[in-house]
Length: 131
Image (cartoon, rainbow, N blue to C red):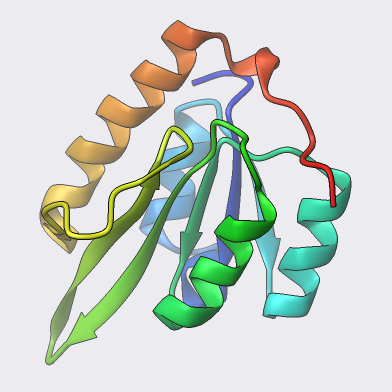
């Protein structure tokens, strides 16, 4: 979706990943952080609609907490053997821990649905959280 700002943290942030390519083909503005500290610095300066992280739930939750009362959504990737699950933590600013996780193969469909929701709300309305 044009105007949707996405922050990718950890392994999901590799420019070559199919997830990043999918987001960019969808018109998203992708920002990539190699570390939690780098991601926190970006959150201080920019508002994000979506945060996707391969870091621990603790690190990902810390990022989402910095988004304050914004309309941000966030997921973290929980690796399991040869695959893994994308676990939702926050959806449109509301905690959703305990909501169903999505397998890697199912996540693109969920992501597309979320991008449509963000687009219908108006991607430009997101504000930078106050510290």
